[in-house]
Image 1 (cartoon, one colour):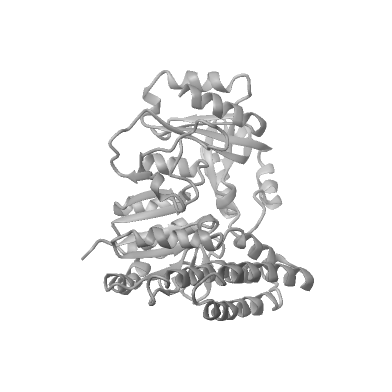
Image 2 (spheres, one colour):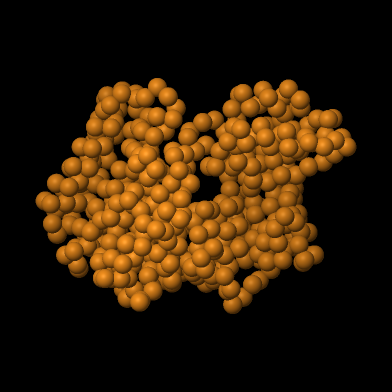
Length: 450
């Protein structure tokens, strides 16, 4: 059997008719059986979220019309525009039925309704891709991701059931090996009760990696609007350059600490199943890209610099920590009960400081710092909250074994105030927190030095 590939195209790659045609050309250059996974067209997911939250009929109608017009405008450029528009209209009518219904009173039902609404972005974009693909293959068709990608019912940030997903994908693999041209949706799945779920913002990469693992694919190709993973954010640093290769460990650190090209969760299935990941530019495939693999040929001490803005630093101070046991367990129990995800942690004798993962802690739209949680913490400790911070991460290999790296980092950060610094938990990163206003200048100085 010919090894299967999975090709994922992001929102910017699905932005308009020309962009989708470029994606089809990329797929046509691949000799391997390929499952195509697509995100919603650029901007549509945000519109759908606003539509889900709309309270007035006027606002609902305005947003719905904007979404419909965007999809229909792309559909008119297909070779079978009339049929495509008809099938899109059916999806749009289904969307309107959900939007126009009463908003449920319970939070769980609202989250479920929101996932159902937001899923229409990918359901429409996959249909559009299939019609552009039919210019080359009359039988190109859409398969519903919800029939294959099974999850739990944590609406807004569902967790996959990989065993069930792999079993369901066996038939999908057989269809690909038989030569069928198939496109499916990223970001969405279904829970055991049959309701639509979503994997969280950026979850299309995760979906693609899950499909790749379930199909025992040889390679996952992630096509976006940049020619690979860069040494740092090119919008911040003019001399940032694309990397030809990078290890799974380095890429995971970059994704976790702010690099937007890869979703943090997307690498886990690839790492576990030994699947190489390629990142390239969908409109300019000739520029090459970055290969993420288990064993890159080179492993430099410094590979890249990542930054993640809008960070929250929570500091908890209590004399009860002095030579005591169980304090950290009590603290993290409270955070877990409020579904708060923690990134970095540093401790002293009587205080603990930690950064909060905004994306992981707001799956269903709740506050990052619930008042009830802060009240519980304040009952036994002094609590301080700092916002407007940026996390800067230096990514590489065996960073703690090179004595010249830390001084260069501190020198580049001077005279700005460092609010937290973490090193040692991973051999692949050195992280620190600074004020948002200082971050760009520090990254530029770091990039020049390292």
